[in-house]
Length: 242
Image (tube, rainbow, N blue to C red; front, side, top):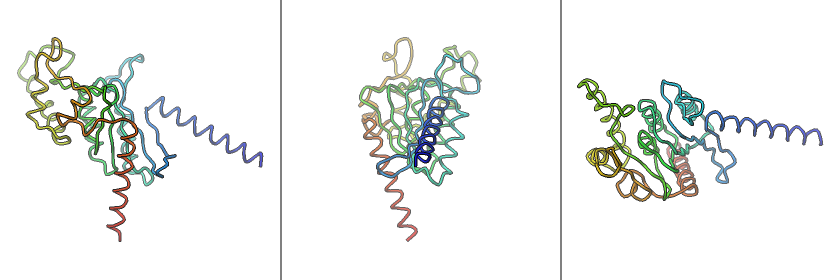
């Protein structure tokens, strides 16, 4: 019996070590001890979203080459039933952020997002990509025009490229929220809200009032909604089979 207990403790220690390494290296974890008997994958999008250029070691970042394969694994998993996305990001690489958002939005598994602290810039599409979105009362979202390192756009071709990228973002956000393209563009180009820049800062309830986010809430509400979505999907699937 003592040998069995020792093996169990060793196995638990190894599992915990693996979980700690996944959190440290990838900001991801599979939650399989749910009281609702659901297996949920936790994805955190923290700091700056890293693109093709590698950021410095002292910069907190979310690497798209880590996120995309894991999302594919979640979608293909026979065990994982839902996805919880927690965001506290300043934004970052537009193409990479939009790629992650598109992947989340295209998943068949139920998904819920929760904005903690902030989900700025390209973090906005990421926040609305899930089936249902929450923001904490003090959470912030910043919408502003597409830009690159604050440089002045001096060539028509560059301006056209930026405009095309911005149109993609606006279309995605309006297609996955209750805001219109016109509302989003007006918030992006608003003057007087952000010092020395164009854009809009939304705090908590303001993000809900304008239709970007579904509701104000925290961890409890996010988990309750995700469990409900999973139960609804499971029930619907069972009815289809029967």
